[in-house]
Length: 587
View 1 (cartoon, one colour):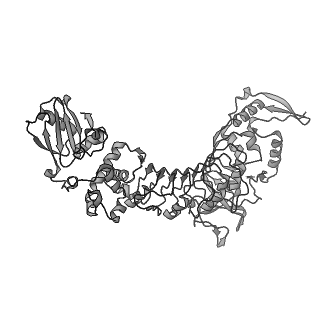
View 2: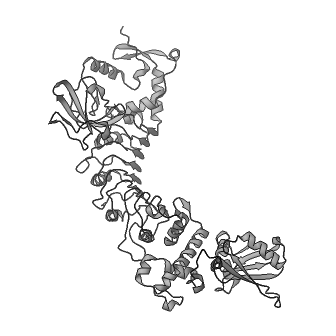
């Protein structure tokens, strides 16, 4: 009786595959699977041009296979992903064997030094199957193959591990040298429930190999293919419906072009997120009937993209998040909308990221106010934001210029912060507004177009808070103490015969010190003081409570009702407004 001892190291292979594997070992030739995957040994007779390989952790693409005189034997010419790893451009002693994009991107390597990788299922088993148990726990049993009895070892463990693979829903095979799907149908049989797969930095060389894997993963929702140098189809894809459930696709550093994105996109009917970072993309045409479901698009680190190309994707109907970090952009313009109006472009865009660009002028920020749905913006590490010594001032200006913004650089914009920013903006550019033709009288308020282009929200802020008064716009010299004093007139409304007190206080004086001063002047305990502010423009106290008035008057009350009015400046009072959104409060 012939007995074959099959150990657990052969997990996943059928018994017939074991026999074939041994036969292949005996012949010193490459093992070519049904899918076209190549298992390398010392000699090489198959066409491997275009295959992806790994050598000592570095990845490359095979560009040549053959003899390189005068040295005997077979050589592979490879182009490295890292051009500093190579030694030449594919030439040797005057003969060009292959071409590289970089003068030091090529090398010649013996086939037995190259790793062509493994199929998908082998990589899954290598990473996710259970470790072998102790030898004494392994059970033996006899099974019949045809009419031959075969002694097996660890058969129960094989069944257990296969069951384990079938339960997998998320896998990470990053840098596991995956090069193909393997034998047809094996993935669907072994692990049909995978929903998230990370296949980044592997040895996949073409989009067809990706399709061979995806065809067997009908529940796949998230797929990461970053850092695989893929060849994409030059014409319309031959297979459709391969990704029926795919929602997130990551193609960073794959070398894909925009035209290839559009050709393949018909196979992503429900895609929600698409990541295309670092592909040297040039947006050459508008998506037609594709990418219509995409909500997030990442185009970061594609330095060829400019503002005109962005207009080609401006009508993606569901695009909510657009990431444009490090593309070198410095300007943007929506030609269908004038100052103070909303654009029809990017109708659903809520979150825009423009970090690490060349934005240095305020017109860029002005244009963003035209986006009708924009609620969040990230624009760090730009000359406009990094060049200023006053980061807080820059933040306030951005807030004032984009009216619907709720989050800036991942920090929430609270109502009181917006109010303070808009009031400061209104005052800071008030003199410029008046010189441009602005006026407190609505019938005479006609600032010229140049001012409106530079400050498209200024007129709206005047409607919201009232036009700035001349007293608010008086130019002060900050280094002269007399120009930094606030004049307060204090009186007792319920005691007509009480004389009016007048004090001058520095604008940097804190509220606590103001409270102490008023307690001494009024002969009232600090704990009994009640302060709020009111505006001379608003006569009804009820209007104060809904926040309609600028910070120009302090109201002080205790057992007697008192008023402290500030006729010019408002720095102390602005703090009251900022930190106490309800004008009536206790100190």
